[in-house]
Image (cartoon, rainbow, N blue to C red; front, top):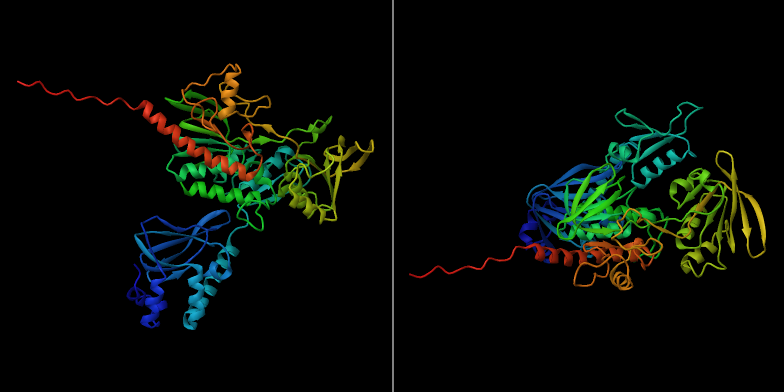
Amino acid sequence: MITGEMLAAVPLFRALPASERESLAARAADVRLRADDWVLREGETPAFYVVIEGTLAVFKSVGGAEQQITTYRTGEFFGEVPLLLGSSAIASVRATEPTRLMRLDSEDFHALLTDCEVLNGEIMRTMATRVAAIQQISAGAPLASVTVVGRRLDPACHATRDFLVRNHVAFRWVEPDGEGASHFPIVQLAGGEELSSPSLRELAAKVGLQTEPADVRYDLTVIGGGPAGLAAAVYGASEGLRTLLVERVAPGGQAGTSSRIENYLGFPTGISGDDLSLRARQQAVRFGADVVVARTASAISGDSLSAYTIALDGGECVTTSSVVLATGVDWRRLSVPGIDAFLNRGVYYGAAQTEALGVRGQSVYLVGGGNSAGQAAMLFANYADDVTLLVRGPALAASMSQYLIDQLATKSNIRIETMSEIASVEGKDCLESVTVANHRTGKSERRACAGLFVFIGARAEADWLPPSVIRDEWGYVCTGRDVMDLVAAGHATRWALERDPYLLETSVPGIFAAGDVRHGSIKRVAAGVGEGSMAIAFVHQFLAERAAAIRPPRQRSVPAPSH
């Protein structure tokens, strides 16, 4: 318990009357930390802390890397900067030895400032010094440690740029002069090393991203890093499971490219999919999950008793006691003659900030009537001269949230054309024009187009799974009651256990599915997060069953013969 006598030894409180110190101590929490315990992480909800005894190291993410910027010792205080600015924590703080802290919540801290002018002045002076120090650190940090030389409309260059952006690697983009090298992109690293047309895996390793599993054996392996996969990794790792997450490109999935998610619980002003994904990734890593990127799973073998082996691209394998499939879906390809020739040369599936910057002052077309298309239209409206949203149906109301429909109506440079679709595409080295067919009028019109962005339908990313994992006719993974219904209807795969599959369990015991890849799932970010977290509850039940099944029977003691 914090006492007034303890606070008398703190320089900040030394001049306070004993009665006020006692009153302050009565409102304070007594926080005790072991060495290497985190007090808080950058981005979390702050509080006001005073170091009663011990030492803490302060870290801040600068230029994509975490750096130690200072140390707090006995008698010092911290937390006033974000509380006074009304922001989340601006740095991470970790104990370097057994440490004891006094903590005041926001309301008590502001009451302290209001009631005591002397403390107010001291805290404000310290805050000004710390803000200036943070500005110096930020100003001195290199804006980019990587330079990418490439052509904007080259597909390989686009893939490299998109990969770096989505993985939050700062880089500088340089368009080459003249013809020059025939192979782009060329990636120049901070140490002077130069990579020519690197694979995403090679690039990821060179810029410091984790591409190799740290272990060969896990309790849980999550395949796919969208909202469902990230939630499964966070909950699995936080509940003590040795967890691996394998992601093909970057955590976030399709949701990670959303410019603004306005209806996600807890974010009244909205949050970008990229920011949401970054926070989830940081959470998973903080709880001890291994998050590897630029890797794919190519096969699963084994059984529920002996564990499963997952083969990764490149020939590596990991052994795992349970699996959560969260590979999500990919956008369905547009069936227009010749369109594949313009892939990443003006035709894109999905959208991200990188594409928005490339269409400044031009005309772009979006195909699709769902929330993803609406969010992209709002993004492009801030850059392009005009944005046209093409919808095959008669209205948006059946497929798009009302708040997005209302927002689209506020943008004078967004035009919505229903009962319309792309009939043809044209261009030389890149997309130059599209022909739009209006089924209401029966007319077709050729129009200039700098970018065509497609958000239609979805295709499950499940082709790599073995036949024993039952899928529906569209490739979505079946779970729970659907598995038993298909088995009862004569499906070749049989359920191996006496109990029925758990709600999110596939036709293979111990392999679960969550998020968009699952048959019957609701295609919303919040639904994916819910399924990913719920899957971990079933994983725990399965692991308990498995442990009981493989536990050797207890030996009955035999009494010694009496003589």
